[in-house]
Amino acid sequence: MLLIHASTDLAQQIPLWPSIPFFIILLAIAVGPLIAEEWWENNRNKLLVSVILSIPTIYYLVSMGLTEHLEHQILGDYVPFIVLLTALFVITGGIHLSGDIKAKPWVNTLFLGLGYLLASFMGTTGAAMLLIRPVISINQERKFTIHTILFFIAAVANCGGLLTPLGDPPLLMLYLRGASFTWFFNLLPEWAFTGALLLIIYYIVDSKYYKKEPKENLAADAREIEPIRLTGAMNFIYLLGVILSVAFINHDVIPDMAQADAPFWLKHLREIILVALTAIAYFTTPQITREKNKFSWGPIFEVAVVFIGIFITMTPTLIYLKQNAPGMGLTEAWQFYYSTGFLSAFLDNTPTAVAFHSVASSIPIADNVAVVANVAEHILKAIATSAVFFGALTYIGNGPNFMVKSIAEDHGIKMPSFFGYMFKFSLIVLLPIYILTQLLFI
Image (cartoon, rainbow, N blue to C red; front, side):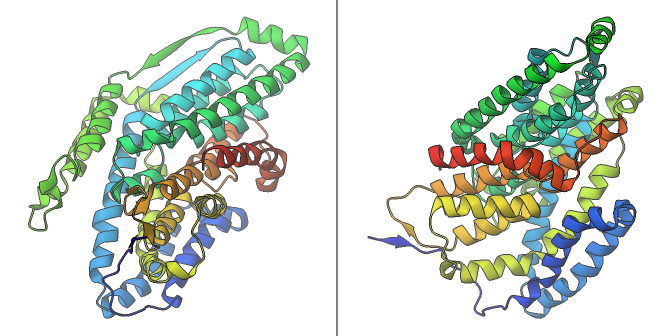
């Protein structure tokens, strides 16, 4: 049987120790909010951590003659990553949904289902920020609401984003590595199966709690009715522009973008258009709409300063993984599924997906196996699916998780602790669903 071997352009083998700054920054992201919440909340401190940890990595890469790898990480990955997230953040931040209708189980399930559908096209962050406040408002007269927020985190802030590169940052990274925009539609069975189970289980749970609601709460819920209103609808046009830009402005559709001597504007045409759409959306959306959404630049600035450190410091790690992947013993799709998944839950699902893509791209591939983004297609499916789904296992697995938790607590909902979330919800509800998904599809 013929084998296709991934190759590396490195003549020298690099050790693991240059990856120490990368491990430290991931550790800081994981434990910072838990042990030094007030200090870590300051974005200037996050920037300081990123700069301090990036300096030795940059020095090492330059001294080893590996600057082209650093350049690729910054210009080829980080810039498209942060430009797209900023576009989605600004555009969806100009859409406001308000109102208060009866918080019946079917209504709540409908909102979670809507969020699940929107997440792949607005991004999990965009869909979560659009719908979390209306969901809280609808349920404000009910006594039992915590379970709704937990399922919201799982469905809207994570699992719903599986179908396009817009849905979740790990998928964008795989898109930038060669997976086409439409390839992610191949994950429809996993997406539909998981979404159906989440919504069915939620409906059953919410129906149970609805029967326990005190009569006075249900009476108040029936009195406090306000029609659902949508403002900022023009931003859906801008959002369509983002979708079309990511789908059609790439190397597959415009091969000249991949030429080494292509002008700067052509190489970064997609990002230029996304920046233009972002600016148009920001300046044409009434300020009052953004005020209703409590829009601020803080969250996207936080992502920018943390991930510049991640993208720089992970460069030696990616090189190391490419060189040593064949000896790691990862060959089966299910192995990549659980390895990617559990690390995504406790680190960050974006660098985790990138790291395991590097591993997968450096192992032998049989000649009769479909290849996507330099990886066996069935393994890429495992990496993509688990990176998105397992981000819901903890509060720190995906960025929107903590944002939803914080908004819920600001509205007086007492959310479970870090470990309470895991042991009372994710491990007993989500993990069995993910295992079934692997057994059926991976």
